[in-house]
Length: 423
Ligand code: GLU
Image (cartoon, rainbow, N blue to C red; front, side):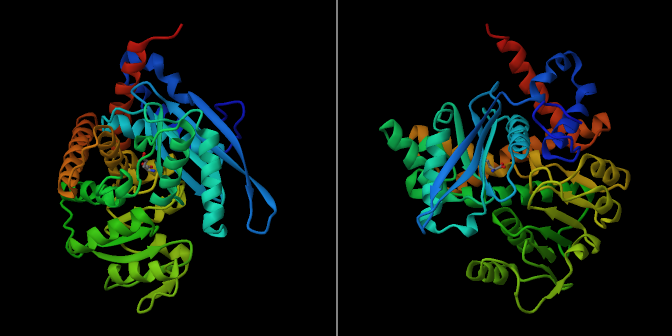
């Protein structure tokens, strides 16, 4: 499936997962289908070379990207990923998922994403800062508070955003907090942003569970990934009385039938930088994670994790997509046939970008809301979107993903059509 001349043929590549997902929405678009090609390619993609002087005086080159998939509804919005496996294909898909996500939530943004192919754990703090500053300068041509607003993603955090904000501001000669979101709170960051994605997974997941008649008390939950998204959702589900029986990250797969102590594990991870070695639980083979008996599974790491084979064996009632693109389209079909409900990424993990939107608004007005106000507005926006998509899926007999894409595509393609083609 080669949709663009410079891409490979891997049908499971992140970009091709996105294309398949969009293809599935065609029959539900009416006359707007005529505009669907708009979504099948990014509006703009920038590839940059980042030369970095290492601590030992040598120079290494890193490849970075910023892709603006669609800007019909507003400026580009989306994170920056630092990971050893980042490719243009992946960043394109991630930018496209942002287009859909912002439209489902009705945030006034298009979709964008950036990334650098680098394992940040191999760099010193100074190298990381220089890498970030040079990358920001290179993509400075196309980002800006009214153009495209980066944020954290896998491998980046509030400190990286502070360097990005400073670099862009130095280059234009004025402190511009609204150029990135997910910044430290005293630099124009929003209260609640760090926990926002995990909170969104919890709030939408709790709602989906309640529609299924699945009580959270003693629910058995498995979580893949223990970064910002996995750890916060683990904590919130544990507080609601669920048992987090398995957690997997790159270092280990932990299992405890009685439930893992999330607070203690978070403290361990803070100290050790990984979950491996955490005492008092069993360490099992990575493959075992997909074979345990659960009520809820939360993939909160990278894309493409739920393959058709894993979907055939998965033992749960509900999948909450904390990660972007964790389920392959064929696996989606298998889960649906097996009666396992999938709450798609574009709603489930949209809490992060929703609070990013609040941060951007607060930066413009220089007026800041309390954490309570942020959570109240977040819950309201994300639950409204959830219920709208739920109703559409029920009434049309389609999956939540296709229903979410139908809502999003209708908004994006209506905007596209109304704007018309220039010149
Ligand atoms: N990286 C996050 C996501 O995938 C947040 C993006 C943002 O806040 O702009 O949704």
